[in-house]
Length: 312
Image (cartoon, rainbow, N blue to C red):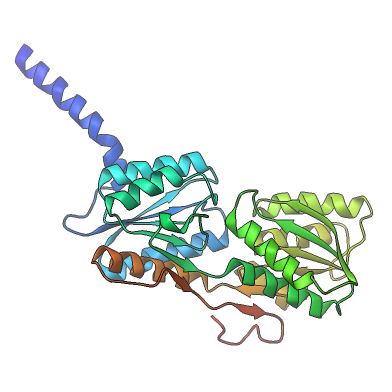
């Protein structure tokens, strides 16, 4: 009896030791190649659309895909990547939380020979990944700001809602804004603040600007979630339509707002294409195929005039 009890205890310890791996893999399907997609967060239309497209493509390609959510925490994402490396997956796709801070785990991945594909956001060191799949974030911001300038007649005051501090997309899109504004003496930014991609935070910020009497002709948001937050603030203060709003991502809510005349324009980044393309590249790299270091997805300005075209 003591021998049986001891064997049961040993088996229990072994099972408990295996549990983190079982949770991570989601009970891996026998024999299928295994890839991972590490997202900065899964809290809005853009990131969920990208992850869903990657999942759908994984099903089509008959591979297993593990999707991880870093919840906008760089340390958490680094830990997730380290665990995946130890787990022995076939390829790694990452939407980085930050442009710097993941160097150690990315270097581990590259040293091990594991394919590393960055999607939609970059890290600063191009030696730490094999391929980037996404849009040109600087051009992304320049397109949005140019659309704003045309809509306001190249004259007026702007408020800007930024993404998280340290995000590559935040910084690059802002550089795009500055490029578009370089020869615009009659346009100025009168307010700007980080709203961290969040509709709720953007609504709070814009409400405070409006209640303080801040005058503006347009609000330029670095994603559609923040643009929707701005629109909610305008509704609450009874200023819908008096201030033009611009966003990025072509989310369903943004397209609806454009149709309703509450938003002027958004930029389509062809989000689903980014997710499926990133997985295709990662699979190809794991099979020793060659690809360019950068694969850019075309972007389109969406307004009321072209919203019903097959632009995606």
